[in-house]
Amino acid sequence: MTSGYSVVNGLQMYYEIYGEGKPIVLIHGGGSTIQTNFEKLIPLLSRKRKVIAVELQAHGRTGDRHADLTFEQDADDVATLLKNLNINRADFLGFSNGGTTTMQIAIRHPEIVGKIILGSPLAKRNGVPEWFWDFMKQATLDNMPAPLKAGYKKVAADPNGLPIMHDRDVKRMLNFKDIPDAPIKSIQAPTLIIIGDRDVITPEHALELHRKIAHSELAIIPGGHGQYIGEITTLTPDFKESNLVVPMIETFLDRKTEQGN
Image (cartoon, rainbow, N blue to C red):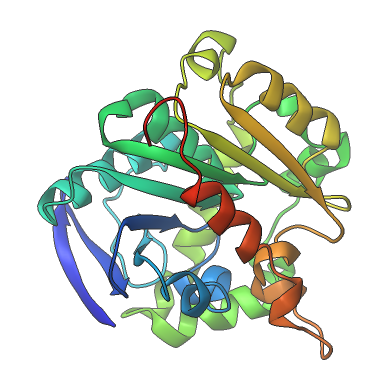
């Protein structure tokens, strides 16, 4: 593994690179780090591919630019990072908020996108139950999942940045606006949408995205939000790597398509 920082649109952006081969970029969810989302996934994916994992503004080891978070800015930051790393084109796997960011990458920077995997992505406010928005209105650092708080403190240069990350993520979600249909339908990249059957993202929303993204496939996997990738808050004592969706992901990425990806 190699790691480093790159100057990205005014940020010192942290990244890690594992393995060799065709590149795939991993984009974490809200309140998360590379390890809290992808620690179980990276060793498996990097057996055959170059895995580039990033930490977005105010998350983990990446600094804060003293501006609100937006999915569009995160998408632009990832695109700039890849340019700095001399990677012209890659596949992308984004989880939760990272799935929404991955959609924005495919919308705003289609020239750098091969295939995309959207893990539990949100594109419309009605894609989650109403209780989710009530919960976000009352979100505090105290009720942030303990494994995510510990994961941040373990790696952050400034552990005191935790409230900043939390508050920026909450504000972004409270202000979340629907992605219009036209940009969603503009996505031409081959797409795999994955959610859990006990996910916060509803099956109806995943199906709606599947119908709007032309070259897409949909998988609904038994389990909760991120359990299919081994996200840290879903881990149990009986965790097995064989329960992860890596074979499905690799089959999707390896398959030849009409788009030539």
